[in-house]
Length: 476
Image (cartoon, rainbow, N blue to C red; front, side, top):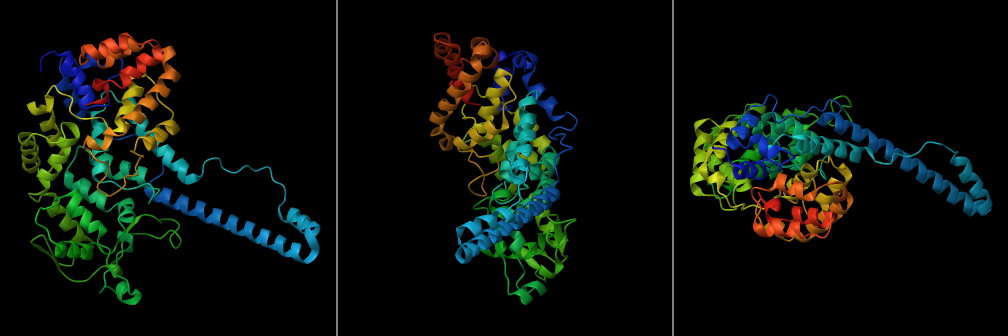
C-alpha cells in the first residue's frame, strides 16, 4: 500500500487499539505491512506473567481461602452463640465478659482485597498492560476476539483470566483445531458450561449415583464455537456429543490438594459405547473419542464460514461483504484452519480498507484507545469499573455467545461514555495538549466538524472530551 496517512490511521483504529503519539507516522509508509509484521513477531499474543498462577493453582488457592474463611466464620458464630447463651443464664455483664475472653485482641488486619478479587485484578492488569503497551495492538485485538468467541465467565470460575492466557493466547495465530481442543478441555470451560456435572447415565458413576447428562458444553460447541446455528446438526447430535464428553471434568481440590482444579478424564463417568455425531461414527476410545469429534468439527465445511463471518463482523461491518467472508472461509479451508493465514487474508482484502468507519468500538477498546492516546497506563480498578458501567464487564458475558459485535448493542451506552470521557478529561487534560493529541490520533481521519469542535473548546478538558467522543475516535 502506498504512503497514506489516512490508511495508517485507519489501520490503527480498525485493526489495532488506537494510535499512540507517533504511531501514524511510524507505519505511514506501509500500513498493511505493519499489520502483517505484527503477526510475525516472535511470541505474538503471549504475555510475560511469571507471577500469575496457573488455572489449577488459582483454583486451589481460592478453595483454601474460602475454606479458611468459612472456618473463621463458623468459629465466630459459635462465639456469638456462646455469648448469647451466657446472656440468657447470667445476665448481660457476664456475657460481655465472656465475649471479651472469647475474642482476644489482635493487631492483624483483614485483607483489604479478598484473594479471588486479587487474582482477577492481577489477571486484568496483565491483559490491559499488554493492550496499552502494544505497538499497534492487532494481535491483542485477535486475543480479545477469540477469547470472546470461546468465552467463559468470571462469576462462574476464578480461572477466567488464566483461561485466556492458557487456552487462547498460545493458539491465536496457530490452528483453529488446536485452540478448539484447548478451550473445550480447559477447566474454566468445563466449569462454566457445567460439564463437570455431566455423567453418562449408563456409566459406572451414573448408575451408582443416579446422575445424568448435561448438554450445555456439547450444544455450545456446535452452535457457537464451530458449526453455527442452522448448519444441519440435530438434537440427537447434541445428546450424542454430550455423552462423548462425559468424563471430561476436573480434579476435586478437597480430595486432591496438589492437583485440584486440573483437567482429568474420569473413565467411570464416561458413557460407554460408540456414538454418531453430525454424520460420523465414533467408537468408544475414552478421552480420544471427544478429541476426534472436535477435530472433525474444526474441519467441517460449516465451521469455516461461521468463524469467517464473526471475524469479518468484528473488524469490518455488522453485515460484512459476502466476498470478504468467502475469501476468509476459503483461506481457512485451504490452510486447514490456520488462523494467521486467515488473518492475513483479512488484512490484504480490499473490502477491509473501506474508508467508512462502520463499527463502534466496544467499551474495552475505547477505554484502551483513550489511555494510549494520552500516554497513560490507567488504574486497573478504574478500568474494570468503567467496563462495568459501559456494559462490557471483563470476562463476564451475559451468555455463552459472548458480547455482541453489532453496533446496536453499544449505542445506548454512548451517554455513559460521555460521562466517563468528561471525568477522565477533567483529571488529566490540564497536563496535556488535546489538540496535538487529536492530530496524532485522528488527524488524517478528522472531519471539518470534528476539527472545529475541538478547536472551539473552551478548555483543555472540554477539548479532550470532544476528541474522545468524536465519531472518528469512537469508531473503528
